[in-house]
Each structure stands twice: as C-alpha cells, then as structure tokens.
Length: 304
Ligand code: NDP
Image (cartoon, helix red, strand yellow):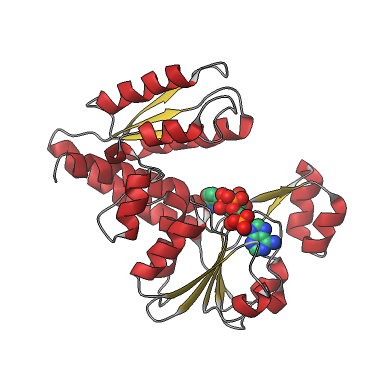
C-alpha cells in the first residue's frame, strides 16, 4: 500500500498561513473580501458555498453570500457581477457552478474582472497561466501542486500523466506541472490505449468523473497517484466492487446509504508509492486555495 498524502493536514497548514497573511494585511488596514454568488436552490452547491463562507470567517476574511433566485436572467446576473467588480471591499468573486441552464454561464464568467477571478476560470487568467505570468490559477489543480510539493514528491523531470482535459482541472493541472518542469501528457476520452500511457506515469493525476476508473494495471508500481475525482455511489453492487471487506466504509454506507469514491479504484492505491485518498485528499485543498487566491487577489489589486 502506498503512502497516504494527507490533503486535510496540508489544507490546515495552508489555511494557517493564509490567516497569518490576513493579520499582516489588517495592520495595513486591508481586509480581503470574497463574494460568493449562489443561484437558486441546488443543495450540493449550497453546502459548498456555505463552507467557503465559513472558512472566510475562520481565517479573518470578509465574505458575502449573494443568493439570487433561480429565475434570474443573464442581464440581471451581469448587473450583479458588474456591481461586484466595482466594489472596493470585494477582492474575489465566485460564481458557484452549475448556473441555471437559461443563463449564459460563459458570458458571466468572462464578465468577472480577471483581478477578482479567484476561481481562475477567466480566459485572461488561463492565458496568463499558460504564458507563465502571475495569474490566479484554478483552486483544485493549484491544490494538487501544493500536495506534491509539501509532501516532498519531486516534480521536475518526472513524467506526469493527466487523465482529463477540463478547463477547471485537467488543463490547468497540466500547465502548472509543466511550469514545475514535469514532462506532461494529457489524456482524454479519445486517447488510444490509455493504460499504456498511464503506466508510464511517475505522477498520475485522475480527473475524469468516473468512479474507480483507474485500475491497478493502469498504474506503474511506485507511482504517485493523485485522485481528483469525487463520485457519490449509492448502489450496493457498485459499493461491493470498490469496498468489499472494508469495515469502515461498510459502516458509512449502511448508515448513509451512500459513500464517496474517487476516479481511482481503491485497489490501485496498493500499487502506488504514494496517493491521495478520497475523501481527505485533494478535496480539502480546493477551499484552502480559494482562500489563498482571495488574499493574493487583494494584494495584487493593491500592487503589494
Ligand atoms: P469534466 O467532466 O469536465 O472532464 C472529465 C474529463 O475526463 C474529460 O476531459 C473527459 O474527456 C475525460 N474522460 C471521460 N471519460 C474518459 C475515458 N473513458 N477515458 C479517458 N478520459 C475520459 O470533469 P472535471 O474536470 O470537472 O472533474 C473531474 C473529476 O474531478 C470529477 O469527479 C469531479 O467531481 C472532480 N472534481 C473535484 C474537485 C475537488 O475539489 N476535489 C473540483 C473539481 C472537480 P473528453 O474531454 O474527451 O470528454
């Protein structure tokens, strides 16, 4: 069994550092502020946004939660984003995804001022990231890099294979790893003989959105495996496929009727040299990096 890379502890460490920075900024009369926009009543999104707002309070950041109704139009959302762009007390704006289907999500994400784009989704930030300029990088892949670095996993010269090419995870993860001097390969649903490619990885990043997709034979023995996936499973047969014989998981599953599995099959972790568990691996880093990005945005906007 590989070594567990403890994302939860790393996230705690980063949040402590952010709180220290917030204190230093307070001495200059600056309080970084985050505006979180949650449209409609999506239960999962509400849980995410509430925990982001709660973490702001814990670390001393200002935060505001805006909750327009599901019926909001693109024009009204645009007016809301424009107002937030102009506010001096707001350094970071996050539009919790998914937005309702009837609003133009791309137009709205592009309307967020790149200086306040703490999710790192704006094309200007994507371009800056690619060009190796100072940028607000997407939180989840930025968190992956923190896990690797703070766990002492070498990146330079390593062969990194990323499965998934989304703008939120796969692509920015590849760019960040490239800037750390890894040799990168990006795989996707059209990749031929995927297992042959993933088996070459010293660092394998799974960001696919399919439960347990990466199986043991797809992992080079001793590789570092980073599992970004978060998949809720409720089906007993599927549960057995991944967790048969795991008493702790059995307890959670029996109690809640569901459990979370990553994009990597738990058996594949046995082949790895080190790996991020799900839950408790990459997940906790996302909020920590959002806090870090908000403080960074506050500093950058003031030329500090
Ligand atoms: P997307 O659905 O946007 O992208 C999935 C990617 O996986 C696509 O590039 C797709 O390829 C690729 N893919 C799908 N099927 C296959 C296949 N059979 N073989 C190879 N590649 C395949 O997902 P996200 O990037 O948004 O998220 C990925 C996972 O990470 C999800 O489980 C999500 O829940 C999780 N996540 C976790 C976060 C966290 O905080 N830990 C934050 C964000 C996401 P193609 O482009 O060809 O379709």
